[in-house]
Image (tube, rainbow, N blue to C red; front, top):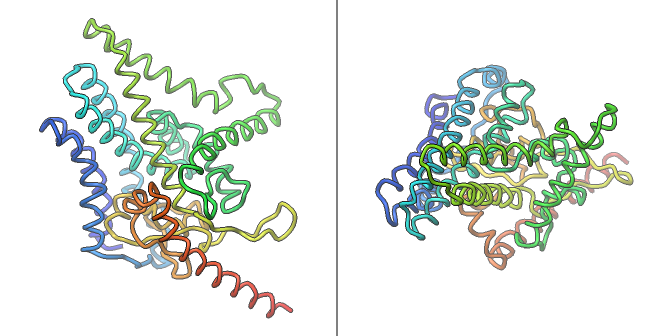
Amino acid sequence: MNNGKRYSFIVCFLVPAFAVLGYYLGGVYNFLTFAVVFGLLPVLDVAIGSDSSNPSEEEVPALQNEFYFRFLTYVWAWVQFFLVLWALFVIQSGTLSVWEWFGFVLSIGINTGGIGITVAHELGHKNKKIEQWYSKFILMTVCYMHFFIEHNRGHHVNVSTHEDPATSRQGESFYGFYPRTVFGSFVSAWKLEKKRLLKAGKSVWSLENETIQAIVFPVFFIVTVTFCFWMYSGRFSWEIPAFFFIQSWIAFSLLELVNYIEHYGLKRKEIAPGKFEKVLPIHSWNQNFAVSNAFLFHLQRHSDHHANAGRRYSALRHFEESPQLPFGYEVMILIALVPPLWFRIMDGRLEEWKRKYYASSAMENALIR
């Protein structure tokens, strides 16, 4: 990996800086983060273009083990934690107008969801306890700790099947998908934890149940912060928990928008009742714009991630055979919010994928015979 690409992942740390800058500039500048992420970044994607380069097999072990790439994710965890604390302190001061408040909470949610949950997702797949702890630590700040359970033990097993609440179906709008994935993912996490605890001979109704932790820890965190700020200022502020839960909702809604985009309409073949073919790079939508991939720690190389979940973001590869999104995630998120436009853009691409996929499958079957 060349130095330009190696250091490009640092771009994510500019985004919280825009949230802070927007607040101090005041007024409409509170929307600066939104403008940069959903306006400037797509323009830079087009201007700089795609990057389909892959690391050589000789480079992969070093990219997997180099501390620098882990260090960036660790740093982000603390940046997010202190960004949230700073934002809650700002809310305690009560200096924002209604429109400024809306822009400010949107800016924080874009940081904690757009980048934060992406980092938590990366860390949650790793075997090191410290990385798993950081993943849960980040998810605590957005009230979505159950994602750690369901994503790793549920979504990656059932992806691109009707068993997976986080896989969107052809013809399903984001607004139809949203309640199914939000509530379905929590239910799935609960079932997975129940199965694990019962197998170990332990009670489901205890703090050893990580889905209960997912409820208790964020509530404990915001109650503690609210109380400390109350003691510090002498004024109880209900706006602090309100802001915390709203930025959390924005954050995990961004996650679910990305989930909607990543597997829309793609299906794995059922090779026996309840048994599906192996997850392949063709079962996830892919994108290679250089800027948005740096901003999102290569999340858009989602095809390789699902085929090889243990690969660190620095070592993820591009596959030509994977179905390709026409734009980066920032633009696709906006398109997903307008279902007629989404269907018009994506359904044709999905049908083309089906033709190629099923044609290649038919050819393989013929060769086997």
